[in-house]
Image (cartoon, rainbow, N blue to C red; front, top):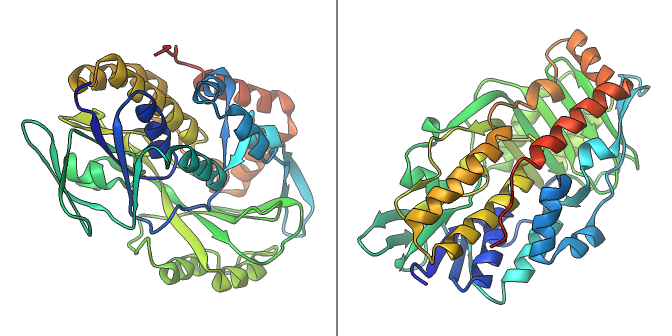
Amino acid sequence: MSNANILISGASIAGPALAHWLVRYGFNVTVVEKAPALRLGGQAVDFKGETHRTVLTRMGILDEVRKLQTGGTDQLIVDANGRTLAVIPGEFTGGDLEIKRGDLSRLLYEKTAPSCEYVFGDSITSLTETAGGVHVTFERAAPRTFDLVVGADGIHSNVRRLAFGPESDYVRHLGHYYALVDSEEDFGPVSMMYNEPGRLAAVGGPKAPAFFVFASDRLDYDRYDAGQQKDILARAFAGMGWQVPAVMKAVHRADDVYLDSISQVRIDRYSKGRVVLLGDSAYGNTLGGFGTGLAMVGAYVLAGELAAAGGDHHVAFAEYERLLRGYAKIAKNGNAGPFLAPATPARIRMRNWIFKYRFLLALMMKMGDKFATDIDLKTY
């Protein structure tokens, strides 16, 4: 096997999923993660259709995912007085299998940690391709040389920036931001969401983080500064009705706050030399509903093609791109912002009608299932 030593940047979902397959095929894998430990928070993620189930089955984790599934719960859309306007059924938000992002991340990590090297609290600072590999420097660790480098580090990919160019060349802001806030406050057992034009606040339900969406031009802030993020949320949701004033007080007291843009990655190639992108770094579309499935399928295909090519990255990367480019088209043009936080009262009402009239909802779900299965999986 040529190119047997592989560095993966990112230990969320895509990175450990790829590590699982690479180790199975005989590669030596190191995973570097900027966070000091595994990040276990975040929204629930879901899997849809036969393609996703096939990948989970071939990984040998389908039964474990089923044991950890949350069983997507219904969500109420309410007015300012708390009266129900529509019900979003759990199967719409939860797909066939819904699992907390943190539970899936932990499961993948535990499956791979005994057989590959994880380095937490560190980050790549430079990538220099040589005739026989990639010379990598880190913020903390000593420099090392790897045969191949994989950027599985999300929509704000550090590897993509270092190997391809600045984020502004590849990431398109779609006019909205979203936030997840893990709070100790109890807003009840029922998940509820409330809209005013250009804004959404959702709370309640079984151990779900509070969730916010708001329309905004691009903001300049530190994504690792919780105080700045709380201030942005306070300004964005000032004066909003329903339970939002009490929710914002809980946000102010919370320790775990995550704010990011709803954005889309547009890139004309997934690889450059010995560096390749996987998951959101290559075909991310925030809150599009397919990110986790795309990452898991992408990891399966990328590792399988590397194994089939005997480690020849020229052959494997080209075939990975050929197979994934069409499948990832679902992430190309969608924008969840206007759906979650419609800009006018009329558009809010139109969005709610989808959940009142089941034939409209069934049509949307059928289209989603079609996109999720739009690839012929090889058996590697």
